[in-house]
Amino acid sequence: MQTHSATLLRADTSHQIEQSTQILVHFLQYKCLHLYHHSVNVQSTAHSLAQSLSLSEAEISTIELAALLHDAGKIMLSDDILQKAEKLTHQEFETLKQHSASGAQLLQRMKMPEQLIPLVYHHHERWDGSGYPDGIAGNAIPLGARIIALSDAFDAMTSHRPYQPSRTSAQALTELQQCAGTQFDPCLTDHFCNMLFS
Image (cartoon, rainbow, N blue to C red; front, side, top):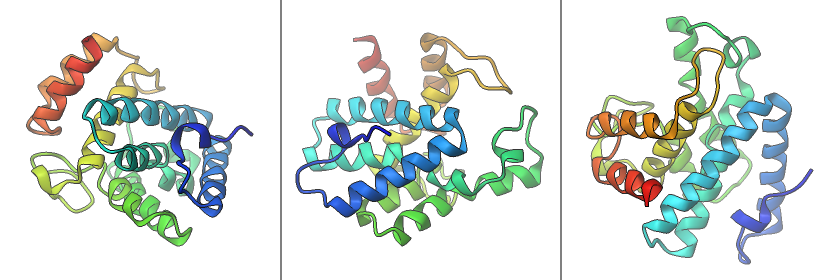
């Protein structure tokens, strides 16, 4: 299996963290190839967005690695939920919603860098406070989690899934703009759309 160390790990990252990353990526591949490819796509988009914001190399590296592992908690979900073609029931959706907290706990148990934990934990929070797991709002949501949320949604909309056809990039960006100020950070959304069209 190829590692992703060339793009997401820096010289000061320990061998143990690299090994843990490879293990988690392997499990993502084993669990569901679509989940693995989605994670890699989100990683790439989040990296581009973080870089366009002129963040530090350390911040970009952290966001990039958190983006790759943002769905690590889905490793523990049943295939009946993860690969269901129909709309999830209320109970199934409540179970699915636990993946952000489960992923953060998994990274913590594997002694991954502490700065990754809140980005994975909060990547499904919404700008208006109606997200999960904690329902925090606005700038209380870590910037990295807001970046991952946009990257996650964009890839979800532009990739084919059993329960929905894929959209064009233009259609996805229109949807993101419509959700700016409610689901997504409005300033970050504008920047993201401008970045993709520049």
